[in-house]
Length: 288
Length: 135
Image (tube, rainbow over all chains, first blue to last red):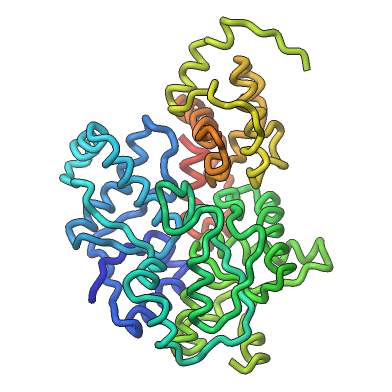
C-alpha cells in the first residue's frame, strides 16, 4: 500500500532522521510513503486572521498537488499536519474563500483531500497491536516522555488527532514498542517555537520547564513529532546546564527513531548518533 | 493605573478594525483569566493575554501597542483551547501584529538574525518567524 507523503521543508534537511526512520518503519509495517512529485513549504504556520487569504496560498497549493496524487496525504511534521488540516477546513468552511484562492492560484482544488498524520496510520490503519507484533527489539524498561507540544493537538476541534488536553496516542505507540511511557504535566505545552529566531532566552526557559517536568516525572528520553520542538529542546540543554548545575540532560528523539529501533533498524539507520544528547549509552546500559 | 472611560475610544475605528481582522468579539471575554493561566509565555509578557483583551475592551489600544505581548505570542492556541467563551487571544494578537506588518513596519531584520541558526536551524523556525515578524 502506497500512501502519498508530504515531507515539508524541514524533513528533507535537518530532520532527515525523522524522515528516514519513518520511511523504513513503514516498509516493515506493510506500507510505503511515496513522496509527492511536486510540493512546496506549507508556510510553517496557519494564518490566524480570517482575512489573510494570502497566507492560505502555499498550503492550498500543497493540498492541490497532493489531491492530484490521491485521496489521502500523510505527513510527519506536527506543523505541516496542523497547517494542512486547518487550511483544508478553512477552505471547506467558506466556499467564497475557496473560490477566491483557487482563482488566484489557478488551481481547481475541491477540498476533498484526507490529511492524516503518520501516527494516525499506525493507530487506525496498521493498528498498534500489529506494530507490537512486528517489534523485534522491545525497548523494555526505557522510560519515555511523550512530548506533544502544540501543533499536533490544537485547536482540538480542527486538528482532532486525539484528546487535545489529555492525548495518549504517542504513549499507546510507546507501549507497543515495549517502552514505559511516562506521563508528565507539561507534555502539551509549547517549546517556544519560532522564538528560536532571536529570543533564545525565552525558548530556554520554556523548553527547560518542559524537560524538567518530564525528567522529574521519571522520563529518561523524550520523544516528539515536531522538528522545531526537537531542535528547541535539544539545543537549549547546553545553556540550561551551564546556568543550572542540577539540570540533568535528556535525549530528545523523534518517535520514529524509537519505532525504527524497535522494528529492527540499526542505531546507524535510525541516525541516533545525530541527536545532541546521546540515547545509545542508556540503551546499552539496559541491554536493549 | 488611572483609566478614563470614553465611548469614543471603546467604539473607535481602531477597535472595530482589530475586531474585523481578528474575527473576534472583544465583549465576549468576561475576564476569567484562563488564557493567561494557560499561556506558556505569559510570564514573559508585560501584559498578559487577558489584560490585553481588557485594555482593548476599554479602548486602550496605545497601552496594548506599547507592550511586548503581541511579539511574544507563540500561536500555540492554549488560550483558545481553554477559553470558556471560545475567544482566541492568539487571533487578536495576530491582528495586532498584522496591523504593523500590513503597513510595512517590520519587527525583525532578517539581516540581523542569528547566522548559525539560519545555516543549521530548522527551516520551519525561519519561515514561521518571518511570517510573524516581517512584512
